[in-house]
Image 1 (cartoon, rainbow, N blue to C red):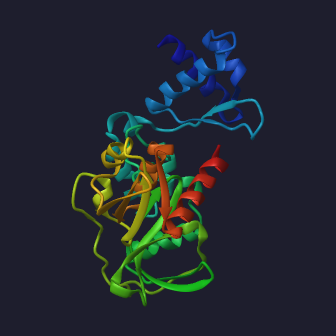
Image 2 (cartoon, rainbow, N blue to C red; image 1 turned 135 degrees about the horizontal axis):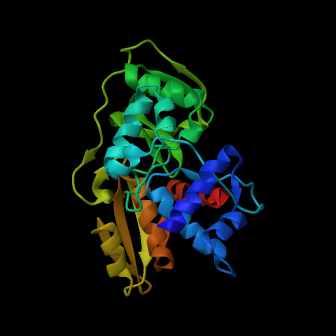
Length: 296
């Protein structure tokens, strides 16, 4: 505890300038090849206790840490689900300033579900502001997306893996399916008058397993695995909609309505399973992995 207090005090005293990682390691009393790893562990302990500490060094540069002056009492006293509720309420009320001042940006628990990560206020721009306004005022949202003009009746705004998503029903969509749109990919965003959007039903969580949650339009996904690993696939993804054997391997078919949960479980399974199709899901996985690689 004394070591953590020394680190926090030095960071606090240096303000926005920050402190080189090597200097913090020296303050903490760490030395040798593992000094920076030990320092990173203590930084994690401090952030878990509500302090907002970030590495402001550029890519390829030596670590330099900065502590932001915040009121961290909420992060200490509230549970992770309560923190996420405060984040969403503040942003939907156009109070992004409160999120910053209370230190709630990016507040997420290690055991938070894949679809409920902390809200990345660093991406709070004019597009996100317009999307939030459309959700709050129940307005039709118009924007360009993948080369086509869209008119969407918004249901909610969510975040996943550092990206913002709008969920809503697009005009002209068959069966009233609820789609997810990446806010960062929208262009020419415009908000219609308040009350112009129809009410869109919220996603159904028909069971405790995230793979059963009805968040995305349903799609049939085909996976291939060996008989030895079939129990592992069942454990992570649940019972399949269909199973058959081909060339000594097991082919499994799943009806997927939560793509984020599928991706997270495929990453856990790793080489034990092969994603056969469809191509749109393969593209989703590749794009997600590429984005994760860029964030490192």
